[in-house]
Each structure stands twice: as structure tokens, then as C-alpha cells.
Image 1 (tube, one colour):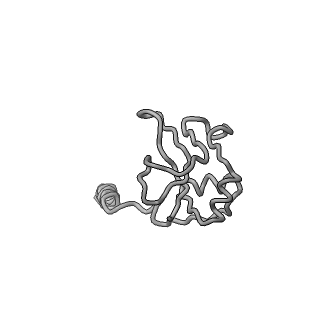
Image 2 (image 1 turned 120 degrees about the horizontal axis):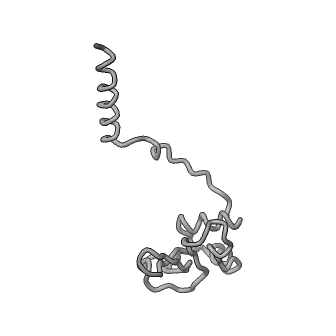
Image 3 (image 1 turned 60 degrees about the horizontal axis):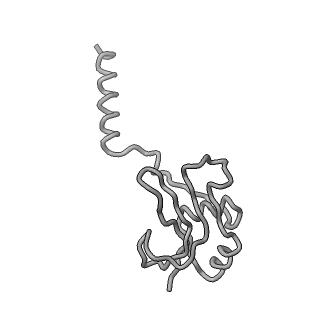
Length: 117
């Protein structure tokens, strides 16, 4: 059975609260899980120590046995010093899309038209 360490959403509308859980990879996000490993409260300030609370010893055991953390949980583990930081590089993130490129070209053409007269 492939297991993942991931977030399960709780809380009410516009007031999210997540549990860090160990779940079978085939289960839905908020569905059945095997074990609760911690909590994440995004409503707290980023420097608050209660924003992310994890059972670090148990998470280390699970990682050693092959559990795969999701991207967000990986970032939490990197911040806690459990995993080594991976360099992230997405060069396409800053490149504007097709429509924005067309709009920028039209705007530049309009700006250059009065200067030519």
C-alpha cells in the first residue's frame, strides 16, 4: 500500500484548518486516513509556533519506511530541518501568457503611434 503524508482540510467556510495525516494514496483528500501526525492552521501569523505542529519523530519513522510527503508537507518538513531543501526553479512562472503578450504589443503600438506623427 502506497502511503502519503498530506493535508486533510477541516474548518468552516473561509476558516481553513488542516490536519497533517498519513493516508493511503488512493483515498480522497478529506477521506479515511491511517494516522494523524500534526496540524496546520493557516489563519495564524507566519511567525507563530502553533501554525505548524508535527509529530516529528513519527514522521521520520514513516519517511524511512517509504511514505511520500506531498509538496506542501515537504515544505513544512524542510522548514523544520527534517528534509534537505530542494532548489525550485519554474522559469515559466514569470512569463506572461498569450493574451497578456498580445495586450502588451497593442499597448506598445498605440504608444509608438503618436510619437511617429
